[in-house]
Length: 124
Image (tube, rainbow, N blue to C red; front, side, top):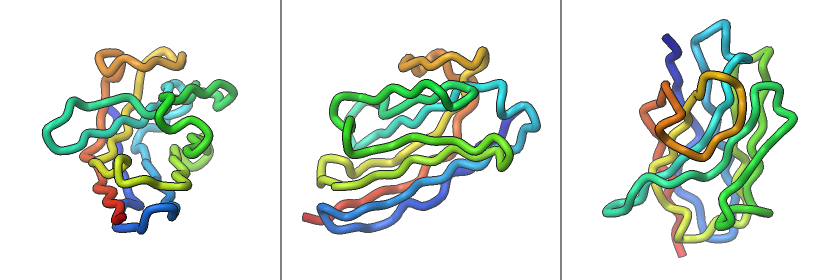
């Protein structure tokens, strides 16, 4: 069992930055690929970014490429999402998730464990 706790959400003006963190309870954190997803009101949950278990491979949704950076610190059992140049369209609840096997994946069904989410609000 892996418990994931997100933090770092909040209210920011368009063009601003936020860094989300996701702390994992498991000592086997380094065995999981990690991902960030988001869900805006009335919309489906969508993929944002993923990182391999070593951190050497990352992949982003086109909508955030060049603005968001996913990273991880396996010594701290934590994955991060640095979000720059935020746009009102980025407003959503952001979830981190852990996928067994360690390889990057964009499919929500590949992720076994999910956090409770953290709200990001972007004012225009």
